[in-house]
Amino acid sequence: METIDVKTTTRSEMIDITSLVRAAVRRSGVSDGLVCVFCPHTTAGVAIQENSDPQVKSDMVRHLGLLVPREAGSERPDQNSDAHIKGSVIGQSVTLIVEGGRPQLGNWQAVFFCEFDGPRDRRVLLRVLAG
Amino acid sequence: METIDVKTTTRSEMIDITSLVRAAVRRSGVSDGLVCVFCPHTTAGVAIQENSDPQVKSDMVRHLGLLVPREAGSERPDQNSDAHIKGSVIGQSVTLIVEGGRPQLGNWQAVFFCEFDGPRDRRVLLRVLAG
Amino acid sequence: METIDVKTTTRSEMIDITSLVRAAVRRSGVSDGLVCVFCPHTTAGVAIQENSDPQVKSDMVRHLGLLVPREAGSERPDQNSDAHIKGSVIGQSVTLIVEGGRPQLGNWQAVFFCEFDGPRDRRVLLRVLAG
Image (cartoon, rainbow over all chains, first blue to last red; front, top):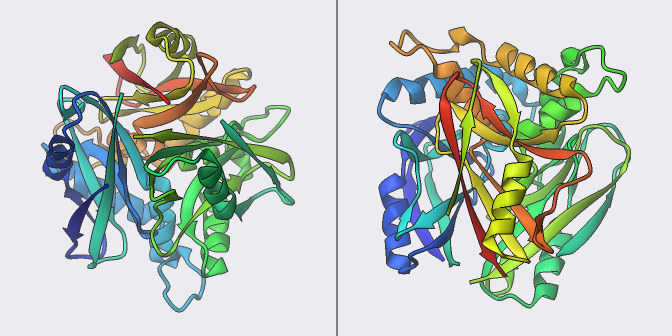
């Protein structure tokens, strides 16, 4: 299992971790198989999205904030139920196909760590399976 | 393939199945690999969420009901399109990393069966792959 | 790796690709394992949903349009941020369990390519792992 460390700097943001995922797949030595990219946090997620136009990210973070506003939570001490709900809408587990030692992404696709309750020190777990 | 039986008791609820997932992984005898947790129903899903504060679950069920109200459906006889839509927002397939014979979850993470059109007798399918 | 070609005919629609997924699994010759179904596009996704009542699909496409309207985007030239956001809500990667040479789906489940910015020529990637 590989671990990627991610440092987030604001409450809600998307951080491109594609090059770190590619490097982890390379280190595994697996040429063909699958790689599972897993977020072990309940107020964050992993998404595949475009990274060429940065406004896609900002539109997405803003619109998720409209769909699941801070007030979505009850009167919990943490008051971060919105972040938990966004995490489940985006999801914590993504599986990619590995071919020729590289995760197969579309031309415009990148892998993002999605922070919904930062800033925090976060981790992403990876496991590459050959086959 | 392993099967977990789940009995739901109300229309919308989240049921913690983590201990059943852990037991299925243990029975597989696989030390390192991946486990796919799959919900074979179209009005339910599988999510990873926090289980220490029960209000996270109730906030999530309530807010999903606001985002996708009962009226989201057309005049179908079943009138449960809201449950179908929630199922697709949450998803039916989650892949976890297995290490040392245990699914790798964060400190606060649990695996939940998400019922959106209960009460019903439900199933969850699991397959553990070594590698 | 297998590739499925999908031709979409309108801006937002769900296309049943179950028979193509079944055929790809059969061609792989794998009896037991997992199959990853991956959408390499950022304005589309892959979902599991019911296909017996076509109104489920139309209710879902319509309600996603209410949750993420065209105006969700900023003043980007493409003005298709709504399609990107829907793609991340639905997700691009689904893993199914393979048993006896067949992907294990519930009685009512089908695999759908979800187009959110068509019409376009699209692809779905598949990889079957034995184990």
